[in-house]
Image (cartoon, rainbow over all chains, first blue to last red; front, side, top):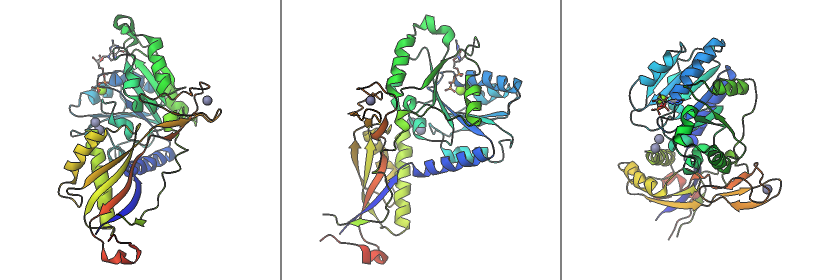
Length: 246
Length: 128
Ligand SMILES: Nc1nc2c(ncn2[C@@H]2O[C@H](COP(=O)(O)OP(=O)(O)OP(=O)(O)O)[C@@H](O)[C@H]2O)c(=O)[nH]1
Ligand SMILES: [Mg+2]
Ligand SMILES: [Zn+2]
Ligand SMILES: [Zn+2]
Ligand SMILES: [Zn+2]
């Protein structure tokens, strides 16, 4: 004897719920979360260091939380800006989840924080699946990673509100083909803005602050095609329906 | 590994369903996995076996229904298979404002329970 019972629940429903709660809560107190995703070593910390310092010069209340599998090095670098910084060690987990972010924010994040930057674990696979309650998702790639990176990691690039290309100062040496990279981005995320930066030379600096401040002021970010699932009428909830099984 | 977190999330939800009286032991779980869900079915199957050990899902099968990714262009009504890597610009008009019709699913569809909890008797149709 056995029964098949409909469940119809999104596997990540719990994360999605706590992410939405966190987004509502933080939005209500005037804090915008920016989720930064990239492969290991693309230059998230370097760009963030520069952006945090710039924000402090401009008198914008910023904070940063950085997640790594091990070491406090990134937090030490980011803290040089003078902004409140927290290191999260993920204990082997290769991504952050909304509940983790929420518990790390509790009792730490200053109440007047306008922009909270979250440096996710260096990984382009699973962080893409976990909403952290961010209002702006930024995916970074450096000029040395290959122009087809967006095609190899379509869910990461496809769900980005903004794409940042880092290490522009070595683009020529790396033989980076800007047009090919842009074409790859447009294929998986048509219409998304791509900004070229160099933390070393200061090129494009302010891109994170400017976009985050715009969202804070009520500007609605780019809506990626991959995130527009309004047509999915079949994802509905009707728990507890029991079918006969043969 | 990503798929382990996903497998653990599936197990957690099925255990919740067990606690709320749906059943005592799950024999199989059916999942819908979209082409663009960012999940590798084989890796998920492997992790699922590990994640189920010692739970109400011990030894349960994982049935995966793959879902093809499709997009639809609102302005010109073209609908297409996006392929992998996906082509999300409209192949007809070049538009950048399509909607996903399918392909992003990561959904628990149903659970096959081994036996029936007594309190549910009235609503249950049994297999003979
Ligand atoms: N030439 C050049 N090198 C850079 C730039 N930004 C970062 N780097 C170098 O790239 C390496 C990695 O930079 P990080 O900022 O640590 O990268 P990350 O993405 O934070 O790395 P993980 O946190 O380990 O994932 C370091 O050696 C940096 O000095 C840049 O704009 N130009
Ligand atoms: Mg870093
Ligand atoms: Zn992960
Ligand atoms: Zn992973
Ligand atoms: Zn079209």
